[in-house]
Image 1 (cartoon, one colour):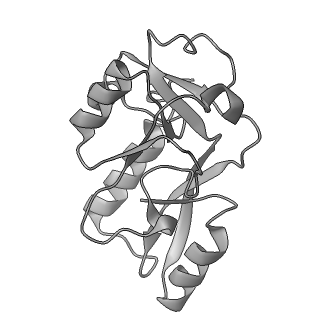
Image 2: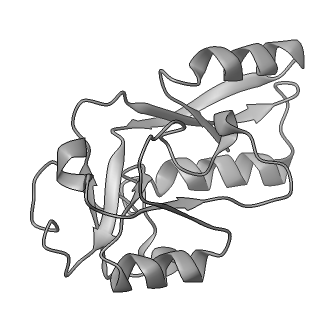
Length: 161
């Protein structure tokens, strides 16, 4: 699974092309803010960066090698003076609630994985996120075909917007 926005499109497509990889779109989504459902901003229809300026931004990083072009968050460059980097998903959700913090995501949030106590709100004045998968060649295994079919079928089920 991989995504691109205006900010990382060129770099991601260059890396894919240089390595003979093909991108297959699954869906597009606005960039969104994830908050605790009891947060004072949770009832807003849309948020902008000024709404978040006094909040703590939680950045999720996993793995040994991280690149700003392949982060977990959809906003690869987020200049914020209050940032906490987490490498553990449970810690991120704990801090989200306790610190009235936020993270950036797509509209696709699985309630079983992230909990039903989060709210996802579109972020104004940002580019859409294009999410898809990559292949080395066009042939997928039977298991790969089933996985992609499952991903496509569950997109509306997991949308919290």
